[in-house]
Image (cartoon, rainbow, N blue to C red; front, side, top):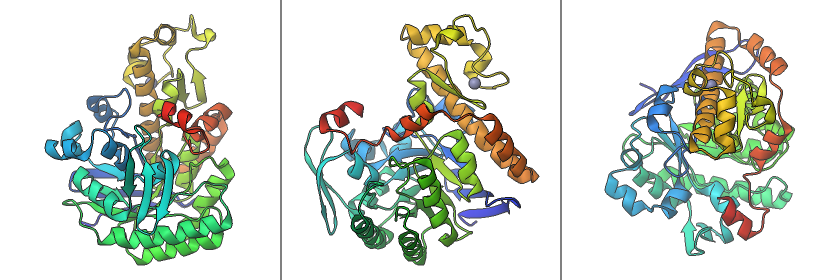
Length: 393
Ligand SMILES: [Zn+2]
């Protein structure tokens, strides 16, 4: 059984229907991967994730190796056993966090020296270390250790980041893996067409099992993000899955699928839930807002999630206003369910040959919120003073 099967390509766009097969289970693509940075999808338990059709979760090398530390996860068996999630896990290499969260860093030939955002202790992460951590975590898909520069970096910095990313990817390729674990390369290069092409070609020559477009979700405006994906995608092999890291809003997911992307992860569903905001097919709604005071409808009519089947906007607004944890949990459940539903719809429409109509309908009815877009970019902390970094974790 091959790792990825391309089942169908849409006639009106680059959208693809596919299937990933890992030793822990099958993943239907395009897929959304809920983010379990600290070995938990914030406020949602594994049973709820399972009920909403989650086929793969994301975990994180940087955060997990700092807390609880690898010794504890290794003693538990691996990350799956530690958090009791038996389906596939993709682990991020930690590169993104080293470049966005960590204090004071020195980039060396073999990796990055940095100080922990928690206690300031001196740490080192490079391609060897990142792959070793992911081997111990036992994820099903490991990401290479890359350099993710700021979106407004100089041409020279962008160039150096691409060269280091290529060199480090070669090292990652040769490292030992956990049983059944595959590795994805990460294409950097900002919005420079030559750099994106160069990085993609070099990585494709290394024959990774899949490819990610990195250097997006780093505070860039949406047109730049779309452009970065459009510049990398033509050089990625059709027979391997493509993953756009850290993206996006529901409307962006539809548009990125149309640009040939198969895999996504994003903290938005749970992050905006904690602000009292819900995603719907018509855009975002503030459940906390006064106009919901006497609204006894669910968050979204026809939504099949546990929150919508059982609770009203008026009740959820009350819970949020008195800081009852159930309010945040139910909004997190609804938002995550909504993301999974959008991906199910996308897959069904590609299969039925009606993706074009779905894409047009979505663009017509979904009203993007500027506040949400700002919130997505707000998790990039490298431009903030260190004290705010620590507070925002
Ligand atoms: Zn719902």
